[in-house]
Length: 450
Image (cartoon, rainbow, N blue to C red):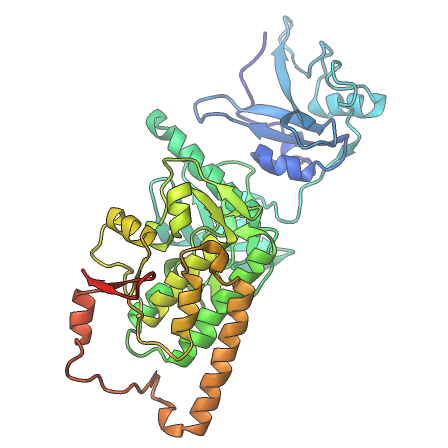
């Protein structure tokens, strides 16, 4: 008689150096690189299902779904009452260690129908795979329907390191399971991408904890909040020098780095760029990100319309130039002191206007930034600058601004905000501008009051 699942794993499995817990199949593909590479893991399609112990083994070098086979280890109770373990064949073993030892030493295919399913090399846990016992959760930083973010600590090579912990809530409500699984998939996808990146202007990942639920990803803890929250908290007092050097150039460098790796972020906005107390911008939130340079989104998915390029709105196709367009809106946010883009306008109206070539009026910003934003929100993606070009242009603007301040000391910073010429009486006040945002036509230069 077959018994139900593995709710309590044998200690020999939990302590095995090649046991990888609830590691998703997408990560398994990456870790099992050579034919004969194998690992132990557990699978649980739904929280209400029993857990299954799986032996995953690579059987071919190609990248199809059949290149890795996942063999369920069956636990069977015999008439005399003893419990034994079996793979595909009807050969029973007293322990899982004995089962593995047999197939490894005998060089016998664990699935007789697939001759290459021989267990040759056990793939050990990676340094980025942590045990839950390595992690201490502290202050709750944020929560949603399917997840939470905590400040915390993780033990890395014997040392305590501060981190932010994103965890997936354990959902048992059948009605929410599909959404919960999507969120877990997104969380693990984010971790998978972030492992490949190492840049000062991109939030770093330490690793994941997937031994059991809740699944966790451990990332760099940035205590300063986001660029958006910082701009709003210090509205009117953030100098143009800081906006250029720290917020804009830092983010541009981070995005140029991601693009050099073929990553489309897909959600560049001031809310998704963290800002340290040392004034370093760090791109975060990779849940929507994709690698490959071009990505076609399924219909019905939610997107941040007010930051999305016109061609992506109409075709659902993302490219690196989609990010460049989003970066233009990010710059608009920075130089408007964190105002909402298209404030008071519905997403439906924004779609129509952006696709027709209308853009927002420029905020008050240094010489060169207006031209830079114009080149980043061009209607045709081919006409937009690359992020490498944006970085070079920003560096030129910064040098010119510095030279100007040196040549004309009267324009130097006073306090924390650069002096600006007083507006003429026929210009609208700041209050009027905020209450009556203006959108201009990229095609004609005309504007329409909203």
